[in-house]
Every structure is written in C-alpha cells, then in structure tokens.
Image 1: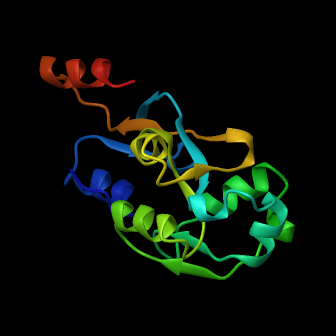
Image 2 (image 1 turned 120 degrees about the vertical axis):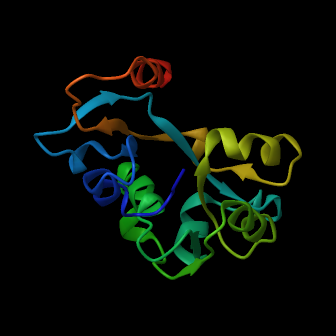
Length: 160
C-alpha cells in the first residue's frame, strides 16, 4: 500500500497491480472501475464557532497536507469561496497532525468526512459551510492481463 503521488508510474512499472487515482490520470490502455466519491468537509476549531464563514476564509490560513495538495482549493472553488480566501497555507504531511493543527486553531482545512467524524462527535472540530461536502471522484485502475487471476477479479469487485 502506497500513498505517494507516483501511483500511475508505479502501476506502469509493475510495482503496483492496482492504483486508486483521479479519473483524469487514466490512459487509454488502462482498465478502471469508478469508485464511490470520497466526501470532504470544511472544518475548523470550535474556538471559531461564532465567526462568519467569509471572514474566517479571508483572514485565516489553510492547513493542507503538502504544497501539491489542491483539495482545499478545489473545495473553495466548488463553493465560490476561492477568490476571497487567504491563500497562505501551513503544511503537515500526516492527516492526524493536520486535524490536530486545525483543532488547535492554527488554521482551517478540509478532511475526509469519515476521518473527521470522531473529531466532530467529540466537539474537537466544527463543520463549516453548513456541512456541505466536496465529492472527490476516484477510480481503481489496472492494466489488463491476458488471464486475470480469480483473486484479482475478487479484489476489483470488492472495491466500491
């Protein structure tokens, strides 16, 4: 299991047999299965509960995974908030650390809904933008095989 940015190249080299990628990265020779979108929510520290969304986005920093991470920007663009946003960002390359920085009030950001649920339930995070989610569409990709093993077909079928 590998969560780096070179998933397509890993698949091409044969280092990986399956890869979860964005649909735009598919090549003609790949086979794929569309997966259920991963839902992201915009979150912040409960310390900011009484602040207006637009004011918060204008003044506070974004906390993202790394410089290549465009998910928060994509969320903001999707809901016409990008143009007013402060584009300064902090980076932290662990999702749990990212959540901790947001709970501490060092900035705001987006997290996968499933990951954020315990933080929201424990009132460590609040959901902004009326709980609107951003669907991140992904596909499971692989290269065709002359004789596909049964276990490989079962793995593909099990993925949603």
